Length: 309
Image 1 (cartoon, one colour):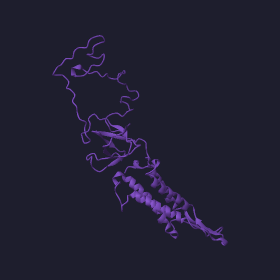
Image 2: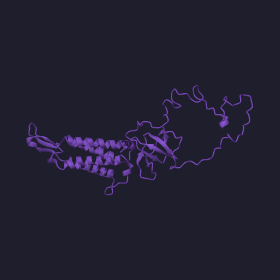
Image 3: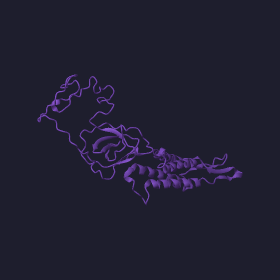
Image 4: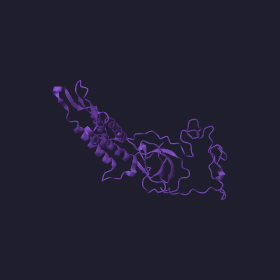
Protein backbone atom coordinates (compact mmCIF):
# COMPACT_ATOMS: atom_id res chain seq x y z
CA UNK A 1 0.00 0.00 0.00
CA UNK A 2 1.51 3.28 -1.15
CA UNK A 3 -0.30 6.31 0.23
CA UNK A 4 1.73 8.60 -2.02
CA UNK A 5 -0.02 7.10 -5.05
CA UNK A 6 -3.22 8.98 -4.12
CA UNK A 7 -4.27 11.86 -6.33
CA UNK A 8 -6.26 15.00 -5.64
CA UNK A 9 -9.30 13.32 -7.15
CA UNK A 10 -8.97 10.46 -4.65
CA UNK A 11 -8.82 12.99 -1.81
CA UNK A 12 -12.04 14.60 -3.09
CA UNK A 13 -13.74 11.18 -3.20
CA UNK A 14 -12.68 10.45 0.39
CA UNK A 15 -13.85 13.88 1.59
CA UNK A 16 -17.22 13.46 -0.11
CA UNK A 17 -17.68 10.06 1.55
CA UNK A 18 -16.99 11.51 5.01
CA UNK A 19 -19.45 14.34 4.34
CA UNK A 20 -22.06 11.82 3.18
CA UNK A 21 -21.64 9.77 6.37
CA UNK A 22 -22.15 12.86 8.51
CA UNK A 23 -25.23 13.88 6.51
CA UNK A 24 -26.88 10.51 7.20
CA UNK A 25 -27.20 11.43 10.91
CA UNK A 26 -28.70 14.86 10.23
CA UNK A 27 -32.47 15.37 9.81
CA UNK A 28 -33.58 14.09 6.41
CA UNK A 29 -37.32 14.71 6.72
CA UNK A 30 -38.97 17.25 9.00
CA UNK A 31 -42.61 18.02 9.86
CA UNK A 32 -43.52 21.52 10.97
CA UNK A 33 -46.66 21.73 13.10
CA UNK A 34 -46.37 25.36 14.04
CA UNK A 35 -46.42 25.67 17.82
CA UNK A 36 -47.19 22.00 18.44
CA UNK A 37 -44.57 20.04 20.34
CA UNK A 38 -45.57 16.67 18.88
CA UNK A 39 -44.07 17.28 15.43
CA UNK A 40 -40.45 16.28 14.96
CA UNK A 41 -37.85 15.35 12.35
CA UNK A 42 -36.03 12.13 11.51
CA UNK A 43 -32.76 11.14 9.82
CA UNK A 44 -31.95 8.57 7.15
CA UNK A 45 -31.34 5.82 9.74
CA UNK A 46 -35.03 5.74 10.65
CA UNK A 47 -36.91 2.69 9.36
CA UNK A 48 -39.77 4.99 8.37
CA UNK A 49 -37.62 6.35 5.53
CA UNK A 50 -36.46 2.96 4.17
CA UNK A 51 -34.85 2.50 1.59
CA UNK A 52 -33.30 5.99 1.69
CA UNK A 53 -30.35 4.83 3.80
CA UNK A 54 -29.07 1.88 1.68
CA UNK A 55 -29.93 3.31 -1.75
CA UNK A 56 -28.39 6.78 -1.20
CA UNK A 57 -26.02 7.06 1.75
CA UNK A 58 -24.60 3.53 2.09
CA UNK A 59 -24.38 3.10 -1.68
CA UNK A 60 -22.41 6.35 -2.01
CA UNK A 61 -20.02 5.39 0.80
CA UNK A 62 -19.49 1.95 -0.77
CA UNK A 63 -18.66 3.64 -4.08
CA UNK A 64 -15.92 5.73 -2.45
CA UNK A 65 -14.48 2.66 -0.67
CA UNK A 66 -14.24 0.68 -3.92
CA UNK A 67 -12.47 3.54 -5.69
CA UNK A 68 -9.91 4.00 -2.90
CA UNK A 69 -9.28 0.26 -2.51
CA UNK A 70 -8.46 0.02 -6.21
CA UNK A 71 -6.06 2.97 -5.88
CA UNK A 72 -4.32 1.53 -2.80
CA UNK A 73 -3.63 -1.78 -4.58
CA UNK A 74 -1.59 0.05 -7.23
CA UNK A 75 -0.59 -1.34 -10.64
CA UNK A 76 -0.72 -4.93 -9.37
CA UNK A 77 -4.55 -4.76 -9.49
CA UNK A 78 -4.81 -2.92 -12.82
CA UNK A 79 -6.20 -5.99 -14.61
CA UNK A 80 -8.26 -7.49 -11.78
CA UNK A 81 -11.95 -7.49 -12.62
CA UNK A 82 -15.18 -8.45 -10.90
CA UNK A 83 -17.94 -9.41 -13.35
CA UNK A 84 -16.06 -7.68 -16.15
CA UNK A 85 -15.33 -4.38 -14.34
CA UNK A 86 -12.53 -3.11 -12.10
CA UNK A 87 -13.29 -2.00 -8.56
CA UNK A 88 -12.99 1.70 -9.42
CA UNK A 89 -15.38 1.23 -12.35
CA UNK A 90 -17.91 -0.37 -10.01
CA UNK A 91 -17.38 2.56 -7.64
CA UNK A 92 -18.15 5.12 -10.35
CA UNK A 93 -21.33 3.24 -11.29
CA UNK A 94 -22.47 3.09 -7.63
CA UNK A 95 -21.77 6.80 -7.13
CA UNK A 96 -23.82 7.79 -10.18
CA UNK A 97 -26.67 5.49 -9.11
CA UNK A 98 -26.71 6.96 -5.59
CA UNK A 99 -26.72 10.50 -6.99
CA UNK A 100 -29.59 9.69 -9.36
CA UNK A 101 -31.64 8.20 -6.47
CA UNK A 102 -30.92 11.22 -4.26
CA UNK A 103 -32.20 13.63 -6.92
CA UNK A 104 -35.47 11.75 -7.36
CA UNK A 105 -35.98 11.36 -3.61
CA UNK A 106 -36.04 15.15 -3.17
CA UNK A 107 -39.38 15.39 -4.97
CA UNK A 108 -42.57 15.84 -2.95
CA UNK A 109 -43.20 17.55 0.36
CA UNK A 110 -45.11 20.73 1.01
CA UNK A 111 -48.34 21.39 2.90
CA UNK A 112 -49.88 18.34 4.49
CA UNK A 113 -52.78 20.02 6.25
CA UNK A 114 -52.92 23.69 5.32
CA UNK A 115 -55.89 24.34 7.57
CA UNK A 116 -54.00 23.08 10.61
CA UNK A 117 -50.70 24.71 9.65
CA UNK A 118 -48.91 21.38 9.23
CA UNK A 119 -46.27 21.07 6.51
CA UNK A 120 -43.50 18.54 5.76
CA UNK A 121 -40.39 18.60 3.62
CA UNK A 122 -36.78 17.59 3.23
CA UNK A 123 -34.35 18.93 5.80
CA UNK A 124 -30.69 19.95 5.45
CA UNK A 125 -29.48 16.34 5.85
CA UNK A 126 -31.02 15.48 2.48
CA UNK A 127 -29.49 18.49 0.74
CA UNK A 128 -26.08 17.95 2.30
CA UNK A 129 -26.19 14.33 1.15
CA UNK A 130 -26.94 15.49 -2.40
CA UNK A 131 -23.94 17.84 -2.36
CA UNK A 132 -21.67 15.07 -1.02
CA UNK A 133 -22.79 12.68 -3.76
CA UNK A 134 -22.10 15.32 -6.42
CA UNK A 135 -18.54 15.59 -5.07
CA UNK A 136 -18.02 11.80 -4.99
CA UNK A 137 -19.49 11.10 -8.42
CA UNK A 138 -17.86 14.15 -10.04
CA UNK A 139 -14.39 13.46 -8.67
CA UNK A 140 -14.62 9.74 -9.50
CA UNK A 141 -15.74 10.30 -13.10
CA UNK A 142 -13.56 13.33 -13.89
CA UNK A 143 -10.47 12.23 -11.92
CA UNK A 144 -8.82 10.27 -14.79
CA UNK A 145 -9.60 13.08 -17.28
CA UNK A 146 -8.69 16.38 -15.58
CA UNK A 147 -4.98 17.13 -14.99
CA UNK A 148 -5.80 19.06 -11.82
CA UNK A 149 -7.40 15.93 -10.31
CA UNK A 150 -4.77 13.51 -11.67
CA UNK A 151 -1.93 15.40 -9.95
CA UNK A 152 -0.34 13.62 -6.94
CA UNK A 153 -1.68 14.64 -3.56
CA UNK A 154 1.83 14.80 -2.02
CA UNK A 155 4.60 16.29 -4.17
CA UNK A 156 7.33 17.06 -1.62
CA UNK A 157 10.55 15.05 -1.37
CA UNK A 158 10.09 12.04 0.92
CA UNK A 159 12.05 12.14 4.17
CA UNK A 160 13.92 8.86 3.60
CA UNK A 161 17.10 8.39 5.65
CA UNK A 162 20.16 8.32 3.43
CA UNK A 163 21.64 4.82 3.34
CA UNK A 164 24.45 5.22 0.82
CA UNK A 165 28.14 5.35 1.50
CA UNK A 166 28.67 8.76 -0.08
CA UNK A 167 27.64 12.16 1.31
CA UNK A 168 24.60 13.72 -0.34
CA UNK A 169 24.97 16.95 -2.37
CA UNK A 170 24.87 19.97 -0.13
CA UNK A 171 26.01 18.07 2.99
CA UNK A 172 29.40 18.51 4.70
CA UNK A 173 32.13 16.47 3.10
CA UNK A 174 30.73 16.70 -0.45
CA UNK A 175 32.51 18.82 -3.09
CA UNK A 176 30.28 21.73 -3.94
CA UNK A 177 28.75 22.01 -0.47
CA UNK A 178 28.96 25.40 1.25
CA UNK A 179 32.28 25.79 3.03
CA UNK A 180 33.94 22.90 1.20
CA UNK A 181 37.15 23.57 -0.81
CA UNK A 182 36.95 23.17 -4.58
CA UNK A 183 39.55 21.61 -6.90
CA UNK A 184 42.44 24.00 -7.35
CA UNK A 185 41.57 26.03 -4.24
CA UNK A 186 43.52 26.24 -1.01
CA UNK A 187 42.91 23.22 1.18
CA UNK A 188 41.85 20.90 -1.66
CA UNK A 189 44.36 18.15 -2.59
CA UNK A 190 45.95 18.76 -5.98
CA UNK A 191 45.32 16.06 -8.56
CA UNK A 192 49.01 15.24 -9.11
CA UNK A 193 49.85 11.77 -10.39
CA UNK A 194 53.26 10.16 -10.54
CA UNK A 195 54.51 9.74 -14.14
CA UNK A 196 56.23 6.55 -13.08
CA UNK A 197 52.84 4.84 -12.76
CA UNK A 198 51.33 6.01 -16.01
CA UNK A 199 49.81 9.26 -14.70
CA UNK A 200 50.09 12.69 -16.20
CA UNK A 201 51.99 15.29 -14.12
CA UNK A 202 50.07 18.41 -13.15
CA UNK A 203 51.34 21.88 -14.14
CA UNK A 204 54.12 23.03 -11.77
CA UNK A 205 54.00 19.62 -10.07
CA UNK A 206 56.64 16.98 -9.64
CA UNK A 207 58.18 15.91 -12.97
CA UNK A 208 56.54 18.73 -14.95
CA UNK A 209 58.97 21.00 -16.86
CA UNK A 210 59.06 24.63 -15.86
CA UNK A 211 58.12 27.40 -18.29
CA UNK A 212 60.59 27.76 -21.15
CA UNK A 213 62.17 24.30 -20.72
CA UNK A 214 61.60 21.46 -23.16
CA UNK A 215 59.59 18.51 -21.95
CA UNK A 216 61.63 15.33 -21.45
CA UNK A 217 60.92 12.41 -23.69
CA UNK A 218 58.74 9.77 -22.11
CA UNK A 219 60.54 6.68 -20.85
CA UNK A 220 59.08 3.42 -22.05
CA UNK A 221 59.55 0.73 -19.42
CA UNK A 222 57.74 -2.55 -19.90
CA UNK A 223 57.76 -3.21 -16.16
CA UNK A 224 55.92 -0.05 -15.15
CA UNK A 225 54.18 1.03 -18.36
CA UNK A 226 50.49 1.66 -17.86
CA UNK A 227 48.11 -0.69 -19.70
CA UNK A 228 46.26 0.73 -22.66
CA UNK A 229 42.54 1.36 -22.11
CA UNK A 230 40.24 -1.12 -23.76
CA UNK A 231 36.75 -0.61 -25.12
CA UNK A 232 34.18 -2.10 -22.78
CA UNK A 233 30.61 -2.60 -23.90
CA UNK A 234 28.00 -0.93 -21.69
CA UNK A 235 26.38 -3.31 -19.19
CA UNK A 236 22.88 -4.52 -19.82
CA UNK A 237 19.88 -4.30 -17.51
CA UNK A 238 20.66 -7.64 -15.86
CA UNK A 239 24.39 -6.96 -15.35
CA UNK A 240 26.15 -6.71 -12.01
CA UNK A 241 25.89 -3.44 -10.05
CA UNK A 242 28.37 -0.70 -10.93
CA UNK A 243 31.23 -0.54 -8.44
CA UNK A 244 31.65 3.24 -8.63
CA UNK A 245 27.93 4.06 -8.44
CA UNK A 246 26.91 6.96 -6.17
CA UNK A 247 23.27 7.09 -4.95
CA UNK A 248 21.23 10.07 -6.08
CA UNK A 249 17.67 11.45 -6.05
CA UNK A 250 15.63 11.39 -9.23
CA UNK A 251 12.12 12.06 -10.55
CA UNK A 252 10.29 10.58 -13.55
CA UNK A 253 8.30 12.47 -16.23
CA UNK A 254 5.53 9.82 -16.35
CA UNK A 255 4.31 6.93 -14.17
CA UNK A 256 6.54 3.88 -14.56
CA UNK A 257 6.44 0.43 -12.97
CA UNK A 258 9.15 -1.26 -10.92
CA UNK A 259 10.16 -4.87 -11.49
CA UNK A 260 11.39 -7.22 -8.73
CA UNK A 261 15.10 -6.98 -7.94
CA UNK A 262 15.66 -10.72 -8.33
CA UNK A 263 13.39 -11.16 -11.39
CA UNK A 264 13.35 -8.19 -13.81
CA UNK A 265 10.65 -9.87 -15.95
CA UNK A 266 8.34 -10.64 -13.06
CA UNK A 267 5.12 -8.92 -12.01
CA UNK A 268 5.46 -5.25 -10.99
CA UNK A 269 6.15 -4.63 -7.30
CA UNK A 270 5.56 -0.86 -7.27
CA UNK A 271 5.25 2.31 -9.28
CA UNK A 272 7.05 5.65 -9.44
CA UNK A 273 4.94 8.69 -10.29
CA UNK A 274 5.77 12.27 -11.34
CA UNK A 275 6.06 14.94 -8.67
CA UNK A 276 7.83 12.69 -6.14
CA UNK A 277 11.57 12.26 -5.58
CA UNK A 278 12.95 8.73 -5.29
CA UNK A 279 16.38 7.46 -4.22
CA UNK A 280 18.44 5.43 -6.72
CA UNK A 281 20.48 3.02 -4.58
CA UNK A 282 22.03 0.85 -7.29
CA UNK A 283 22.70 0.82 -11.02
CA UNK A 284 22.39 -2.25 -13.22
CA UNK A 285 23.50 -1.31 -16.70
CA UNK A 286 20.96 1.21 -17.97
CA UNK A 287 18.47 0.28 -15.23
CA UNK A 288 18.27 1.69 -11.71
CA UNK A 289 17.24 0.13 -8.40
CA UNK A 290 14.82 2.66 -6.90
CA UNK A 291 13.72 2.86 -3.28
CA UNK A 292 10.09 3.75 -2.54
CA UNK A 293 9.03 5.87 0.46
CA UNK A 294 7.91 2.74 2.35
CA UNK A 295 11.43 1.25 2.09
CA UNK A 296 10.71 -1.32 -0.64
CA UNK A 297 12.94 -1.46 -3.71
CA UNK A 298 12.44 -2.37 -7.35
CA UNK A 299 14.18 -2.17 -10.73
CA UNK A 300 13.32 0.80 -12.98
CA UNK A 301 14.12 -0.39 -16.51
CA UNK A 302 13.00 2.78 -18.35
CA UNK A 303 15.30 5.60 -17.24
CA UNK A 304 14.79 7.89 -20.24
CA UNK A 305 13.97 11.47 -19.36
CA UNK A 306 14.53 11.16 -15.61
CA UNK A 307 15.51 14.27 -13.66
CA UNK A 308 18.40 14.05 -11.19
CA UNK A 309 18.08 15.84 -7.88
